[in-house]
Length: 366
Image 1 (cartoon, rainbow, N blue to C red):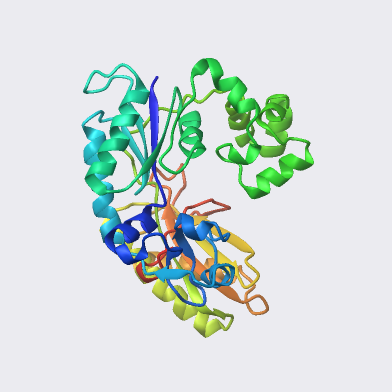
Image 2 (cartoon, rainbow, N blue to C red):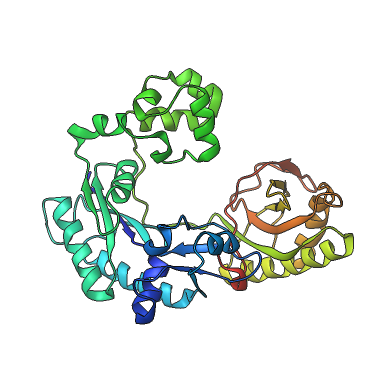
């Protein structure tokens, strides 16, 4: 297998600097400049001050007083992303988009008959620069896990190859924070277990990893050994539709929460119609004033399409949340589970915790 992971450098910020030469070389953050605004992307000039994506705009401005906040232009970013995919398709049709600015490409059998994946990656990087005026970093390896890590290794404008013969040595010296699927909380738990590097992870038994991390334990066990059999999936099936809104002021009164819940349901219905999506599981996401976050889910035996389908369930879910003494900062709703009803009979419901990627409202893009 020859897998390439292409990842654009500081994508949103780079597009803004390209389109507005006055921003070149200056610390900028793309995001909504409001009390609850969040940094979507920071330029490398801003990152030198500790500014990073998903950070509060207010914190970013304190870290970098000269920071320039730029409102996002998502239609422009989508247009550039389409240009990238036109380039990718000149080499392969096995393309798995991860976001607007990154994708996996399986070039094992490629349209140009180029033998080495690194040569294809080098060509793609050059064509991206010529076509868009932007830089990309690329990673090349025999699996998605290693190609992803490789693309981050020498940013910006980097190109890294991880050969199968070198993979185990490369993984052994990795900090576990660099391993796919290991976030801050998982890393902290692993540190308490004495796991700090890929080698430490490899030396931990599958039984212990499974005991501590459930199904993810098998994935961590495999990754530490350079095993990742996931294919590049070119035809992506939507698994969920969602929306979320961060409030300018925290909310805790019944009437205000109900009004915002109602409008969130209407936005969710609009997105369901737009995407022609069918799902049976409704998930509520709540983030509180102290940034603690919870989700509540309910699965029913019928497709959730309309306000009348969703609003009663949303009200049920919000009733299970104590927000009077714990004000709400963010509210989100999502519909998922497009498969069959799993054998549910009429009027049955199933309650369960569910992880779901939520999408912000258009005027609150993050």
